Length: 68
Image 1 (cartoon, rainbow, N blue to C red):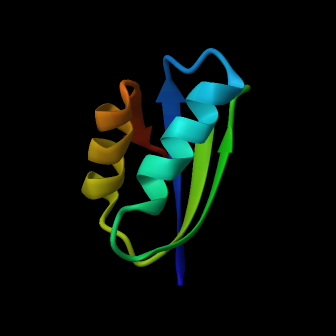
Image 2: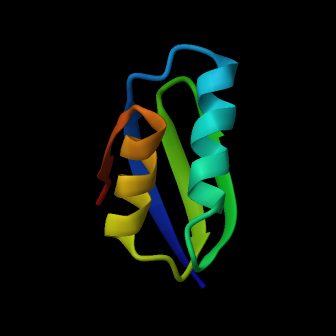
């Protein structure tokens, strides 16, 4: 199981965090997700495609880039 870290911009509240987490959890291969409002990040564990994770965040209405 790998760990992918995302830097997320545009989230302003806990609702944003929950919405982003829900979208990330729906990506195939995701086993667990932890989204943090400040500093705007997510740690995804599993075998998901990083591009699919970025797309899921964008679908939620925010911007994301893979860190590292």
